[in-house]
Length: 150
Image (tube, rainbow, N blue to C red; front, side, top):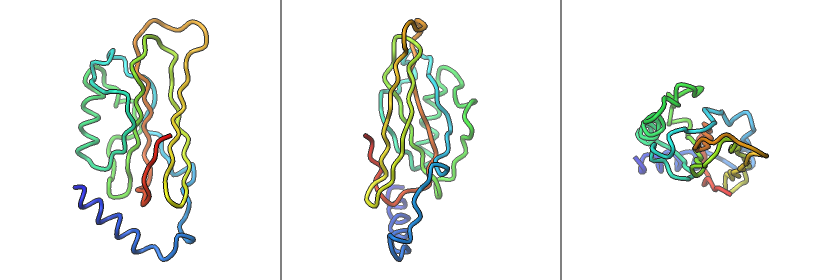
């Protein structure tokens, strides 16, 4: 599967006549699939991590984990992804001992990388006493530059 992705990326690079003609990704190109909290107290088995998902099998594996305690993916805007055109960026924070935590992402594209800045927010004041794990999942057009998390 990685060879196929490499071939697709190579074809995209070869077909580009100039990086000057390359359209920059705009905010509208990033499509929110889902954000919020997992409430399984960590029993989903998802560690704090930043993922770039490029295949159907990786995506299905993640959906299975996400839905192992609660059907979280039922609230997603979509779960059927065309991986020949799109990739998934999924960010999971650590399991927290209270509610009120959240994630947001900021995207910036340069000529040599696609930068994803992960912003974490903690609750102000008193928060609910429930274990949560914030997540943020988006769909982006396939990149021909590396995705770098900040």
